[in-house]
Length: 199
Image 1 (cartoon, rainbow, N blue to C red):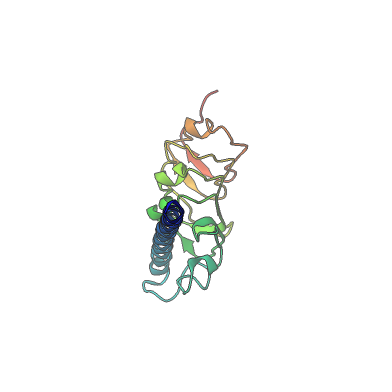
Image 2: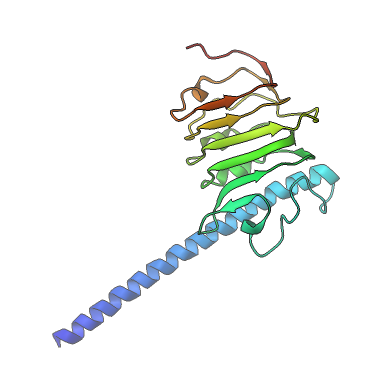
């Protein structure tokens, strides 16, 4: 009798473990699908700006196609299909969408030599795992990011590149230089209208 109870107990434990594993996998799958939707928002925002209609984009070819966003050019993912990096350049106008700040697994944003317009979403520099932020302008572009830099920076950033033809107002927030891991802050060729933090 006790042997049967032991077998039943172990079977119940196994069922519970399998159920929890299933729930965890379902949550990660739903999260990955949500991140794909965020990238599609980014894709369509830049597609419509560039052409006025869906069909051509400022982003690399292959974006928006099935089966997975992790196969799109410049998109890096972890084992759970969560976005860990964005790395590409664009010779056409490119803007950041606020939803990118919901990619909480992002460690690298390396969008180099692009033709930027718009502003930096404040929440983007609060990402909990972000180590590298590179938003550099192509030397041939006449536009660039504008507005003020986000006032609060709390990501574990070690490298920030905001160089070439951007036009920021309001100066450099002191919180950038309070980032404990920061080793590179590069703003060469960028117009700044404001103050530099005093140390």
